[in-house]
Length: 259
Ligand code: NDP
Ligand code: 8X3
Image (cartoon, rainbow, N blue to C red; front, side, top):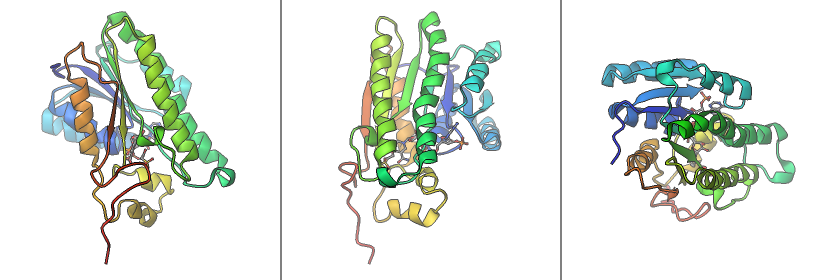
């Protein structure tokens, strides 16, 4: 098993949900964390909390993963003590809307494609060369059950997660012959801010997504990521699909009667 003590782990989307849960577990294990997201004040609060609890070293990267130049400059200007990233968690992502494709909102499409695909590609492009030259590293991409099964109204979001699945597979192939590992984590329903974001802040609609069932928590997903990154160095977990017991497919869920 690999220990995380002093490993440098970059987590995108660390200001909420699965990214925050990963930061907590990795901090507990003594990793050095680089936390990235747009909401810098949330990152600062998280860093303060983790510092108090575990005394870990944390470097903040307030950035928008869609902005290629700022991703490139953030990675190339990391202080020397932070530049040798061991593990990249490409977690930043979002869904917007649940409209039929022919009625869809084009800015929503752009936001999903630019964040979930292009943002993930930019981070990978600027971080992985260092891993290759150091002969060590692990890239974990957050895919989704949506990358395996398309559901009505999921169209573009599902397309972005199918792309993440293909990109993870391609990266694994391209890194064959190096010790660098690549893992895709593909959850079903996880209760985070995900549905609030999908429905543009309509919290009532967001809550209904999880009504009558027990969804995964962000901690459940972070726990699986922790398992994947701490296996022996010769073990690569390519893909994990995890769902709540109350979910059987992207569309088939078990809801208790609310009466
Ligand atoms: P949250 O909405 O709770 O967190 C999303 C994170 O992504 C936030 O920290 C947000 O930070 C960050 N983010 C979004 N856009 C950008 C951007 N342009 N630049 C930088 N950071 C960005 O959702 P989850 O934790 O649930 O989602 C995490 C990942 O897991 C996503 O890729 C999602 O698709 C995937 N996933 C989620 C599932 C679920 O049911 N919740 C199931 C399957 C996969 P900020 O706004 O501060 O920039
Ligand atoms: C998030 C899970 O089913 O809402 O990727 O697409 S789902």
